[in-house]
Length: 61
Image (cartoon, rainbow, N blue to C red; front, side):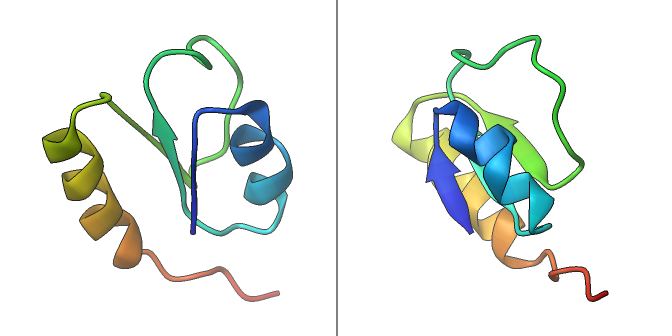
């Protein structure tokens, strides 16, 4: 899992199909993979999305 607000979570990490928690709106409007989950910047939002991301299984090739 990647937890970030940078483009590396949107571009590089998504190419590995691991979940990415994208915090805040810095990357708003960018094309992103299904493995990217957006959330607000509060502790409550981040914690909830991390729990959600832990349930996602890495896609095997």
